[in-house]
Image (tube, rainbow, N blue to C red):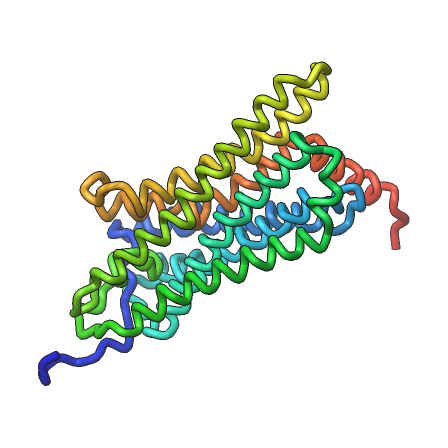
Length: 313
């Protein structure tokens, strides 16, 4: 680095390059989505904690998925809403890297949680007699802890590799949060190692789990087709199809963003794709699991009936 170059200590998130009137409309719309995401996932967490019938491994994993979705929204949306009201407000270098670390942690953890949930359904449907032994509470805690730990450690690797890079200007990130590829574009050094690590991480955390999920559900589908009872087949397929919807939304958008050729989607389209993680996935997951899951709908009815019959005062 030359002596006339200065170290960047703050970044400016450009967000969406739109007129002030449209930004106000987006502020109201995104605020509504944000509140709906928090309420929906909070409702899922509340039902699982209060209803003893949902104290099973499947809903234990679902509760952690809801926690990840809430964390996603809280990590990126408040900063984006502030930028819609006050464009050009800076974020510190430490704050930016913290946001990157948290986003990657939640993204990696959700990938692994979706894999764990598919394994849970595979064991429950294909090996029901072994289910209680394989999916013991100790095993469930181990799987969840491993998912969070691996997600955090892999995110830490990315952040450490960013910290070795010099940032000497420009200081404008063309995104609504500190997304890792957008941050790397501002480094005034070779970022090839970072990009190789990102690609390897995508293979390990996206392609690998997705392949295992597809293998699990192909075997689950064969097991469902062998079920004699039409009602049993319908109930089993309903539970698994809700999980497949979430898997398709999450892995599909992630693979498009990080593994498709960059010429396929310009930067503005790239931002729109990331809205799936900030808004649409956290908002749709509770809807998918509640509207397509009889047990969750039953827990909601029981909670509402209990509330309506509780004494006042």
